[in-house]
Amino acid sequence: MGLREKLESGGFALTAEMAPPKGVNTSRFRECARGVKGRVDAVNVTDFQSAVVRISSLGAAIMLLEEGIEPVMQLTGRDRNRIAIQGELLAAGALGIKNILALTGDHPVFGDNRQAKPVFELDSVNILQIATLLMEGKDLAGNPLDGAPDFYLGASVTPLFNPLELQVLKMEKKIAAGAKFFQTQAVYDIEVLRRFREKTAHLDAKVLVGVIPLKSPGMANYMNKNVPGIFVPEGVIERLRNSENKVQEGLRIAAEFIMQAKEEKLCDGVHIMAIGAEENVPILLDMCGF
Amino acid sequence: MIIMQGKPFEKILEMIKDVDKVFITGCSLCATSCMAGGEQQIMEMKERLEKEGKEVTGFVVLEASCNRLQVRSALKKKKEELGKAQAVLCMACGDGAQTVAGVLEDIPVYPANDTLFIGEVERIGHFSEMCRACGECELGWTAGICPVTRCAKGLLNGPCGGSRDGKCEVDRENECAWVLIYERLKKMGRLENIKEIKAPKDYSRAYNPRKIVVGCRKEG
Image 1 (cartoon, one colour):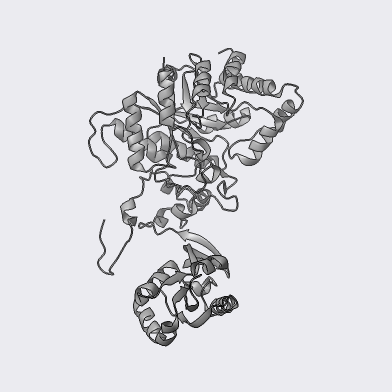
Image 2 (image 1 turned 30 degrees about the horizontal axis):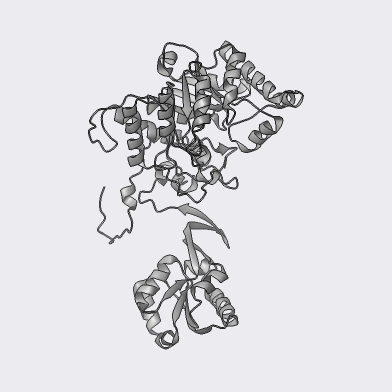
C-alpha cells in the first residue's frame, strides 16, 4: 500500500525524511533508506534543504525507487523557473515518482553557496497549480503534453504561526491548487496541535505532523532561538537535561508525542525528520510499536 | 529614487590606476540625495585623488546625469577640462554613468558608485528598497505594500514558513511583508484580496533592456 492509499483509506501514515548525500558516495543514504524500508509508507527526499548543494531530490528519489521504497520528492521554487519546474515534474512522472511535496524553499542566505541568485519565480502554491495542470495534460502555457503524469500532491504547513489565520489562509490556497496532504513543521507542544486541528477542521486534506527527535537540550534551545515555527516547551528541555542518555530520552519524548497525537486523532500520520540521525528512525518506530 | 553608494576608495584607485588626469561628474538628483555624487562628495573625492597624486582637471554637478540632452550640453561647456583628462570618474548611478559614457564616447568613464535599488528616503541617509520595477504593479490589492520587493522571496500567495513574530528570517531587522499586508488588509476589511490564488508573474514584462515611448503603451 502506498502513501496515498494509506491516507485515503483512513490509515495512520508514516513518512521519514532523508537528505540526499553531498557527494556521490550514496552508501549511507541507501543504508538508512533500507533501515526504514517496509516500516514507513514513504520517504521524503529534500530539495537542496537549507540551500545546501547536494544530490538533487529527483536523483535521490530515483535511488529510493531502486531500493524499492516509495519516495516523496520535495520540490522548491528557489532554484528553478517555470520551465525547469515543469521539466523536473515531467521527469518525476515519467520515472514513476508519485508523491510531490511543493515548497517555496529556504533562502540561499542559509546555504553553503550564499552568492547564488535566488529564483523564487514560483511559490509553493504556484508549483501545486502547475503540477495540477500537468496532470490535466497541459503545461502552464496551455500547450498539450504527450502523456500526463499522475501525482499525489502535498505541501507544508506551520501549525505554530502568528497570525495563524494567515497560515490557514495559505493552506486553503494550497488545497485549492491541488494539495491533498500536508507535512507540518515539527511540533513539540500537543496544545499547538490541538489548536491547529481546531482551526483547520473545515479543510479537506490529510495532515502528517512533523516530528524531529531531540538529541540534546542545546539542540532544543538552538531551534527555539533560530527556527521559525518551532517551539520546544521548557518541560521537554528539562526532561532532556535531567536524563542520562539524551538521545534515548529525545526519542522517548517523540514517541510519547506521536502516541498522544494518534490517540487524540489530531493528525492522519506523522512525518519524522531525523536530521542527520536517520539510523534512529527505526528505534523510534519500535518505541511507538509501529 | 535610485539609491546608490560610493565604491570603496581602494576599488576606485584600482580602476583608475593607469590614469593620472581625471575629470569628475556628479548629479544633482538621486546621487546628491544619497550623498554619493553631490558637490560636497565631489570636492572630497577631488581632495583624496589629489592626495594620491592624481590631477583633477575639472568637475561638474550635472543637473540630471540620466538625461542625454542635458548631459551633452553641460559637458560641451567643459570641453577644455575634459580635453586634458585621460578618464572621467562618474559619481552618479549606473544610468548616469552610461549616459556620460555615451555622450563622451572616446574617453573612458569609470563608475565611482554602486547602484543598489529603487527606494524610499526614510530620513536623511536612511534608504529602504521599495520597488523592483517588475513591470506590473501589484500594490492595488496588497494594501500599498509591495510583496515583490519587501518579501525576501517576492512571494505573491502569502508568507513562507520563515516568518516569525512578524519578522523575516532572511534578515531579522526586516518586517515580514506578508504579515504587514495581512494586518493592513484586515484593518480595511479587505482580507478577501489575498484569498485568491495569484498566478506566477509575467516576467516577459521585465525582459531587459526595456524601452518605452510615452503614448505608445503596449497593451496586455
